[in-house]
Image (cartoon, rainbow, N blue to C red; front, side, top):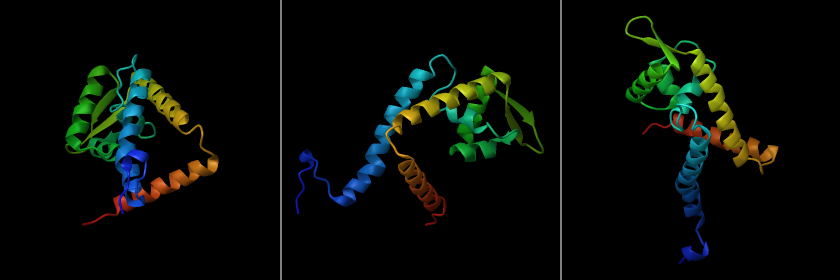
Length: 154
């Protein structure tokens, strides 16, 4: 069977692939644009914002924990932490062994609040047409995908 992609005919299996590969890229581009616009006056970017937001409820998070929460490797986390220490958002404190603990400074806490508001604003815009039931379903589906990815072993 042939499909005419120009007329929007997409087989179900490709539609699912489109949902996972094309739309996330569109989402990321749109999200990046909106977040950048709203963070202009801060020292945060759409990528670095999560390092600040993650420390919200954690005091004394190690680099390893921070890497895990944000989902990046330790080398990138080390560079980001150094940059945030340099601009006055993070404070590094020596822990046991070679471990360091990262906490927010007062300026970092203010940046965190701004970052949280920006993310909330963008996500509120994107989900404004969703019912409570749709939001709940979407969160449940995403949680299942995350669990499946976390439990994957080749």
